[in-house]
Image (cartoon, rainbow, N blue to C red; front, side, top):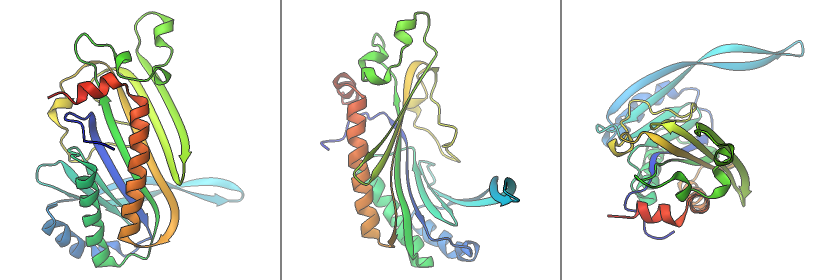
Length: 261
């Protein structure tokens, strides 16, 4: 995929694997916490929320509130955080670096969980990137994005406020969901993806104005006997698909700007 950009627009990255249910997760927690602490993730917190479980009664869907518990293990600089639940492990990062570093960190955390609980299988491997496209002074957003995702605001006249584009493609085994949100204001997050106990890189917080959020989500589904090598290969495949989608969404001018010293 070539050399990484000097100033990439990615401000939040997520890797996740879904696996067999761990109904006794709380019993494994002390061992997992110690393993994560030794791996450089000592900032531990329990997060409780209320979700809805849908059950059928007399042919009708009946929602029932269910308490959901997740456990977070973060680095002291609040740039990386593992989140584990009964059926998933997620790594969130606000300081992505390179794919090799990020995926290596995720696989190391997954290996430590596996050492404790002995996972049986995986159901889904996913990778998701949030990019902040903020034009330089005297540039326009149209110089940074492909015309297909710019919407119709320019044809309507007046002041553009909001535009949304969504594309779902199946690329080989990868389910690729790409969203582009154009709006005014400062940095934002999708409603389903909020950083918990993490700090955003300050260079993304100073801009206010007409900008775009690129939300690119790739995943591979299918049950496989647990294998770190398999998860690694799936992450690499997804990363290649997302990389191609990113380059198709932005312009050569944008890539040049993000590669300036």
